[in-house]
Image (cartoon, rainbow, N blue to C red):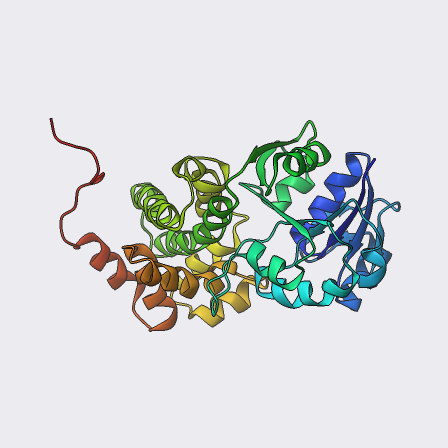
Amino acid sequence: MAKISVLGAGSWGTALAFLLHNNGHQVLLWSALEEEVKMLQEKREHETKLPGVRLPEEIEITTDLEGSLQDPDIAVLAVPSPFTRSTSHRMSPFVQDGQIIVNVAKGIEEHTLMTLSDIIEEEIPNANVSVLSGPSHAEEVGKGLPTTCVVSSHDRETAEYIQSVFMSPVFRVYTTPDMLGVELGAALKNVIALAAGTADGLGYGDNTKAALITRGIAEIARLGIKMGAKLETFCGLSGIGDLIVTCASVHSRNRKAGYLIGKGYTMQEAMDEVKMVVEGVYSAKAAKGLAEKYEVEMPIIEEVNKVLFEGKAASEAVIDLMLRDKKLESPDLPWE
């Protein structure tokens, strides 16, 4: 049995606390929000973000950050990506040398273009940071529906330990050494999902969505490989797997926000309606910044930014994507 602290009691943190408890581990769930903790303590259920998943009494729920970091075997960092740096900074004085921290949020920091693991390592340099990601909506994990993820660490031993802790009959975990690829796939798919949702809102069909998914993963992989990640990662769970589920699922907040934008909502109106952090909005500018920094063509990312931040009509963005110059699908493949 491992001692695990889950830091962040939103839908994903709550679902993982439930999963890890069911795996037989000692679990503590922390939130910085006193009202959220009070609700969870009294109701044993996150009524707004994960209704229907009842937390057992054995799961301790607290606002005490220092107490949450008293020698856990694993600290799971599950706060939304915009709060990764501030939460890591708050954690830093209490983290012991070599503490395993598993980040499960998805995003790129806009003003630094840093991955979330880079941010955590900058704020907590004595930690041993890993990443868990994949096609894994909290609503389905909370219901015990079969789900598969991938964990990446700086060393195989840590990755395999985390794998063993999270694995269950309904939650299968693979390992990979490509942490950069896992994080890029996880963050950038949210931006593509905004585009897919927008296409749904505009009334387009399955053909359009399939085009966005396939050309979207091509853009993500081009950038990732230029940055040093591996193609295989983008063909896997945190790449095409996570992209498919986020573009298609009714649980996807990024797809829902995009859908509302396609219906004529502004970006802010869509975020207000979703009532949860839409991480693709926060990652969109960062994705565009990375594309410019590494000189990689990412037309879908570019058009999403124009719709979100420059007032471009979504229907016009689709037309501009369709009427781009003729291209080879795979430029590296030679003709016979």
